[in-house]
Length: 253
Image 1 (cartoon, rainbow, N blue to C red):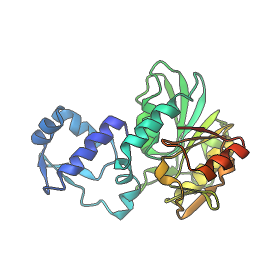
Image 2 (tube, rainbow, N blue to C red; image 1 turned 90 degrees about the vertical axis):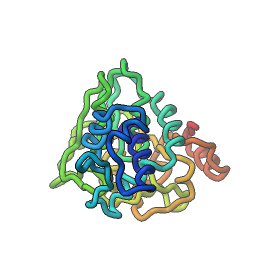
Image 3 (cartoon, one colour; image 1 turned 135 degrees about the vertical axis):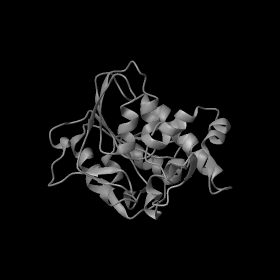
């Protein structure tokens, strides 16, 4: 999801904390956009909100599983936007780049100049929607079974486009970073996808805001030394600085 759509959905979600519904026309006026823009936001992107009889309401089918995407995309938006600006500078023309499924990825993609020609590979719906908005991007979506709780596609019978493509770079997100326990995620279905992308890529770049450091989540998919670069929003604490320096891992913040 693009950052502008993310912010509009976030604002709509905040509106619904004070009321069980909001009229579409009123929402458009408050956001200073057209009603059609909101309709596109709600229909084109995974969301915990739906349009029902001219009113915007919370999707009754939304469950706690949507935490991983619908909830996480509204957290630490300023940090993600800043990281997106930094990480986008690392994408070179004509490169093949894998973008992970984290909610920071659309901010990276949005900040890549429109004139930059590159190939973007992904395995998640939100990342795909962001990539397809770049006019000079050749988009490759790794297919499989769609996991509606996280909007990622998991390969069937081990088949993946990453079996045949070796990206120049892979931007990998994380929910937890620890010196002792490595890099972790909330979503177990992501473990195989992240590992496969990292194994295929020539350069792995860890993308995470400072809130992820010293956190340990359920699914471990890599050690910290599996990355050549880390992009974050604040300078990491001294133990992490020493770890990265000793292993030749560069830090961009």
